[in-house]
Length: 560
Ligand code: DON
Image 1 (cartoon, rainbow, N blue to C red):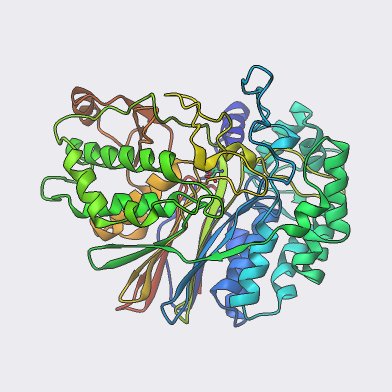
Image 2: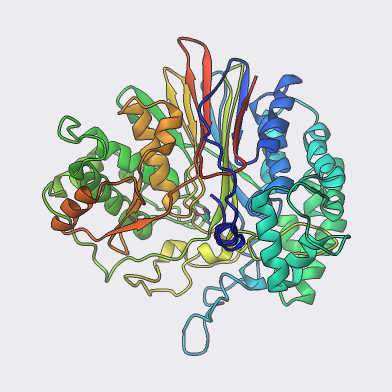
């Protein structure tokens, strides 16, 4: 998704950013679809040299940290879902953790009120980064090409530079004008002025940090000089993260959440992401629907989607958090067909349910995460979503290290016990505890058919991620849309509370909106939902079909 900054700047500066109409791209041997064409090409080069999908994913992720710094990162965290050619599926959880010094009430003042911006835009909003640990673990277990060869392309991009694009140049100008202490220096670099579109932008400090990671792997980030500098930065700025936090960080391999939809198997991310559980819950509900009466984009269809979303998000808020701190989450029950049947029975097809505002609410989610999808020619697939939370995360970093820290601590429930209809969730499973992972909505997903990858998909967008992935999967599986169409067509978002349907402007007919209102729904337009990056495998014809969402100005499906 373009960041709000770039959207604002594009409007202010009076130029239209180039939005290529990304039709589908076909390939036989391998494909990478990401929000940066440069990064997609880096991944495809790795495949061409004999790397597998995991190798390509590692190289793409490091390249995105250079070319798409709003969300591509080494200072944040995320999730990887991998299906191997033998049909086995696994996931790597590299979500950030709360520092050891974090406490449940750390964002509250003496009156128990949330200190403004403290959990989103302060040094104390930074979680212990997980990306390097996750990429390293994925490579150690499932990669094939030498580690250094996967980090090197990112080092080259940072050292030699790459052509500044309009979107990034807009962000740079914004931060320079705002005199944002770290971000303005980050973008000004050695030249002292922002790089104009078309000029080459270099990041020598980032290249140095990446070199330590290339040479020493996991330890290049979590121990030694880089770790000392991170801890030094935290100490100087009253942050919480110490060398001990970094040394103790470990990415976790976890079994995927598994569901089925008709003849398909769905694999997605388990907690600490809520994405997989909510996706499977909603797909189970959809399986019960009578699609003869639910034509795509009709009021009945949108109503049913919204009711499914409302229920899945209520369960999300009530039950989900870090599994290492919540051993009793009822995951099996939530993703069971029986649970869907119960939920289905509660849905009135003629009128909206009412979300109970005394129980669950919403938090503001940031505006930058990024997803990419990979398939290789051997039948391996990787679906990876990672984030800094807000666009450019905390907007803080060390000039010596050249990367941006996340502000992921904002994904914890900040006020224990306080849940409001339009502000906050305060449920227990996602309260802050030292070394706990904050609940996420990221939903990197692989749908399989007869044990082979069929669809690799994911998106940024905070809580909307779950719903945009859900609708794209449904569009392919139920409505037989090709991947590019499935990504582009109208999507909605409902998240329990606030109790309203958001829909994509110009894509829902005003008449349908009126019918939904008459059923009791609040209906609100928004510019766009999601920035999906997907690949579908047409196994019969031995073709991979990829598409990047047209809301990404630099996105590209790259294949060979
Ligand atoms: O983990 C999460 O769910 C959020 N921190 C993701 C934020 C996000 O997707 C912002 N993106 N557009």
